[in-house]
Structure formats: structure tokens, C-alpha cells
Amino acid sequence: MNPFVFNTTKSVVFENGAAVRIAALAGGLLGKACLLVTDPGLRKLGLCDPCIDALEKAGHQVTVFDDVETDPSRETLMRAVEAGRSAGATGVIGFGGGSSQDVAKLAALLLGSDEDLDA
Image (cartoon, rainbow, N blue to C red; front, top):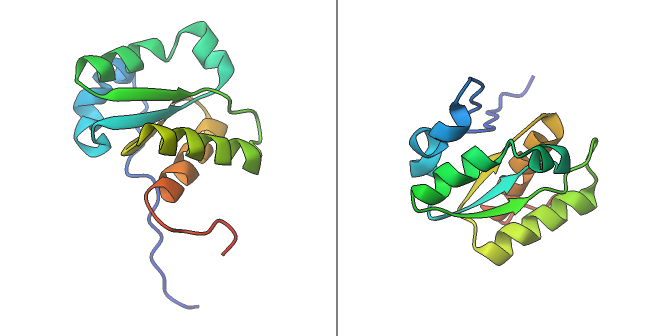
């Protein structure tokens, strides 16, 4: 077997009240502008609002991409990346389940590098 190093998400936080503590937990890693990736159901229920409010109160500009579907398509990923680029996002937050987390991780990779998704 060839040795390798695989680095993924900086951190995953799963706890009661984490949304309102997001700026304290991750604010220093996000930079001034962040992309919050989630799904329309969580957004409609208002579950993202405490996270967005906490980030904005801490001085972050938040762009919300809330169009993640189950088993997200490449098109969804690329729309999230474009939303991040348009906003000048310096950090990415995945809010919600696996699909949102997957899109957020890949969006962060593509926003922060010259990686080619097909390479």
C-alpha cells in the first residue's frame, strides 16, 4: 500500500447550542466573509437563523446557499461555489446533514484552491 495523508473538514461540531456559539467556535477560521451551505427545509424552519445571527453579530458577512438536495448534484455544488466566489467567501460552514456537509466540504476545497474536480 502506498502511504498518503488525507485531510478533510477542519472540525465537525455536534452539540446543543453550537449554532449560537459558531463565531466563538469557528470565527477565527472563517475570515470576514463566509458561505453557509444548508438545505431549504432547515432554512424554512429557521434553524439556521441563530447561526447566521451569531456570525453577523461577530462581524462576519454571511452568504446563505440553501439549495442543497438529497444526493446533491454536481450542478448544485458548482452553484454553491459560484455563490461563494461572488460573495468573496473566505470560509465555509456546512449546516445540516450529510448532503449539506458534502457540498460544503467540496465548495471549501474548490474556493480555497485551484483543484480540478475531474483531476
